[in-house]
Length: 497
Image (cartoon, rainbow, N blue to C red; front, side, top):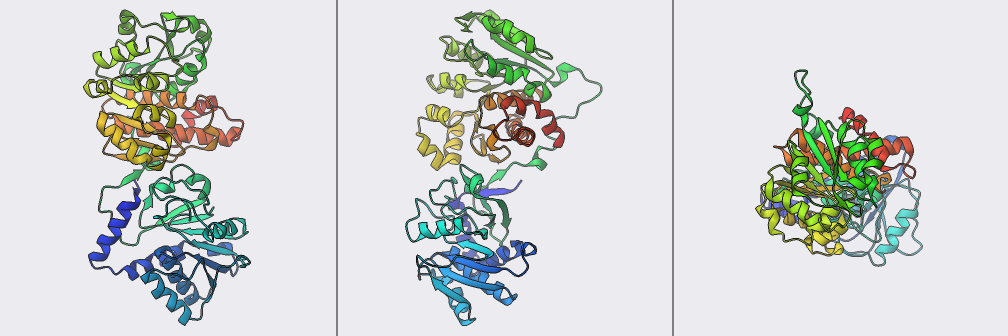
């Protein structure tokens, strides 16, 4: 797994490396060399290169890069947003001047024409919104027709959360030292083309987060033995659906997501009122009609005991709606069982109005899968607070309540309060109704197959769901694909792993 760290961890790690004997100017040179080695020179015959610099150490990387380019015979010129420098930056800038490298200070009519523009305006420590002249510089970079390379992170993008207002849109971003969470979260995918990282000899002083990728998913599920049967791979129950949202439980259970993810038996527990509508779609799954009140589940203890008899994992909430008995249902499961329980959608909305202590006292292995609005209700933090610091908000909640939390977003954050994984699989076409239901079906299926390894199964489920969405988008297009298409692509996603 690739390391991902916070901006503060990167800053402290950098300081520690310098104190341990590596000069800061040497680290700056290594960063510049890493950027140089990442430039796809093969795309150009003899490129004209413009390096746009701010005032900090990110600009210093640009000055050091200019020296390396000049030494290797490339045409390079510098553009300074303003003539102000960090100590190391000034050292390399003066060397550029002594080498006769062309430079100018930004003005409104500055020429941005170049084959390659290297963005060294802001580094990962930037927060807030760019003001002029920086805002104008960023806009000029974005409307240029150059191939844009951002050093460390795209200028204007927050290194921790991936948010920004005026942000450079790059063809290539070269992360320095370690990836930062801001390379993957919120709007990062829309601003970063290709992303690569260069090691310059800085080891994190605090525990990093990790990217969860294809290599991590390999071998996560048990091999299917010939000498086995359906019970070997887990009976699971999916409890949800209502008269208003009958489609959601179909997606979670019937539209292949749970079955295609390998569950031995999928039991769909849904209100009797919609059972006849659901029944034609039940192929490999089994149907368990529940008593209902006006098309919403009515809790009956004996029915729920029968429903959960023998199951290895349960998913609750998909299409459940805001029924009067939701709290009774959730409380019964959490107080009387010790299996993995995934709570999604209206189960989360119900939970947000219940006493949090139930999460701490239950013997169940709880998995919560909120999107931002649902997490706002659960955590009592505003969406703005969560978006600014999503990793820490998620990790703090998971640690406090003893749960595994999956926070949905452009990239998915999965944490058990200690470990953090960022899953980047997924695509814009998945921003459609039912995508979360498919995810819940996949994860519950994996939990049923490996109930003793909840955290890894949640990570795997998020990764497979994203891969299935990417496959569906290639087939159907980002506008026309539906969550049903994602469900139907689960088998191909697992096979690709």
